[in-house]
Length: 174
Image (cartoon, rainbow, N blue to C red; front, side, top):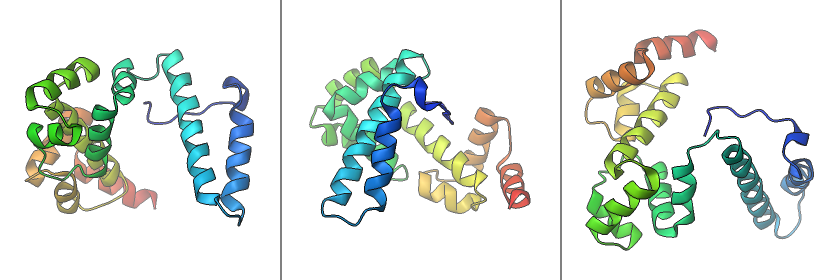
């Protein structure tokens, strides 16, 4: 998905009433509030994903992968726990598949290997944390990089900025 998405309500039919209801539910003190909010957020996300897909703002592979419950479960776990010592075998186990079948299906749906996909998640989460001013060592530990040097090099290669510059920008912006 794009890093930031700004849409006028009228660009996505039905968006305004869904968001209105979401706010009503979020601030209400009624039974079932959490369930209603969760369902409305799911609907909102689906509407936005469809919009992004229609306008080619999202890679089609991730949408195809999210339709497969086995792969979607793995993707969710990778996002929630990027620092875990993931192997293709452990990911295949979550999917309930053999290693070879999982790796082949993952590549077919996402367009990249499970390992490369995990690295991109780790790098994007690390970049976001560093932009917030978090410490490089802490970030490296949380996203699964064994050394700060490796993380700094990856950030520099992908974003053409050093973690130190990111952190200084964050501190200066606060």
